[in-house]
Amino acid sequence: MKRVLLALAVAVALTGGWLVAPEPVIVDDAPGLEPAAAAAAVCPLRLDRTSDGKLTIASSLIAPARITVGNAGSILSDQSVLVDDAGGAAVLFGELTIGGLAGAFVEFGVTGAGAATVSRGEAGVTAVSCPSLIRTTSLITGGSTRNAEPLELILINPYGSDAVVSVESSSEIGADSAEELSSVVVPARSTVTRDLSTLLPLRSRLSLAITPIRGLVHAFVEGSGGGDRVVIEHVDPRSEWVTPVPRFEGQQALLVISTNSPVEVSVRVDGWSGGVLTEGVFSAVIPPRGQVEIPLSDFEIPLDVAQILADGPVAVAMVVEGDAGRAVSPANAGPHSEWLMPGPGSAGSVAWIGVPGEVDAIVEFLSLSAGGQSFTVDAPAGTLTAVPLEGQVIGYTLRSDSPITVLWSVSDETGIGLGAPTPLPGGE
Image (cartoon, rainbow, N blue to C red; front, side, top):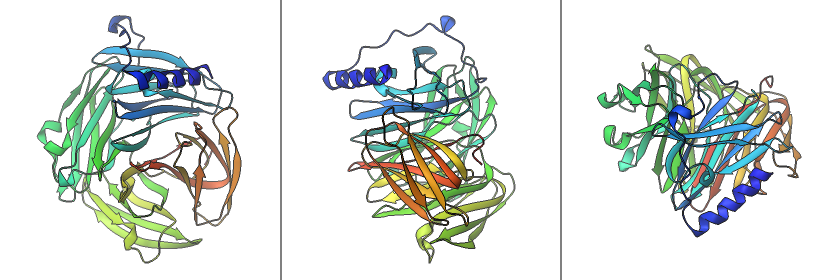
């Protein structure tokens, strides 16, 4: 609770002027950050005079989290955050960085934990789940540089050793990587960016494969489309994905599926609509290191839940775009009965619950804010249920009596953001 009060105090300070820069910690004296934590995640932070961002933390156990922000080889902020009795905490970007782009390393110390960020401002709304470390090739799917839209690759290295990564790209014209991305050096405790709109312009759908050559990094892309900002996190490629299909007035929903496989990959999409499962609503063969785009509005029956099955490793992104801008989130790797969902709760928040299967679900929403409202909703089998979430809370823990798939969104007059929750271990 002390942290929440401090966050409010910082919000007041931000309205009156820019914060004084914190004293950086000298690298030699800084605590070591190595990729061996029991559970850790990295969040991209962008603080400027036109936006207000919040990092939220959820934990299945009442345990402190440590947030370390580094840049240019130095640690700018290192603090411990106590979650309240409900298992949640929130920290404003202004508490962690004085401005610009930085990476926040969130170390939980327990396995059942997660983090997310929400940012609102003149440039639009973003929602992003903070991914854990991926030690092999990871994928980012659903970006775009069409119509000269800005798109920036963000590589964050919060650790004590330099890293080198190779980045390969694919788009609607096939594999078309830029030589400048073949070997990118990311110094220790630093964030490196590359302008994809310059290196790979005019790509309607752009996907990236990030392979560590030495050391480890966390990867994101940040861009804008239709006047709205979007941030997409990297994911571990898998052969099965499942996602609810959110519906927004004036917006089109589509799936983008990419692969880093050196051979072609066959994919099939099954879908539930109104409680009825239809197998093979879409099928395709993705070329080596390629991608495919699936406009869901082209289907005769609007899908409530989509399941993607592949015979090789793929990443799946849910893309929503239209009059309100663009939002992108990775799909879920599978349905689960327990989820941590930090992030939603402020005005314009909605949880999208999909129930793949033949068994109805009763879903309990447990507030992550002390004194917050908890409630239960019924979610029929094979359908989509939209659950509005209001009340300035930190987020929720979701518990269901049968497996569900979940996305969450935040929106206002400036745009829309889309995020995915964190499954809890044992919640298969």
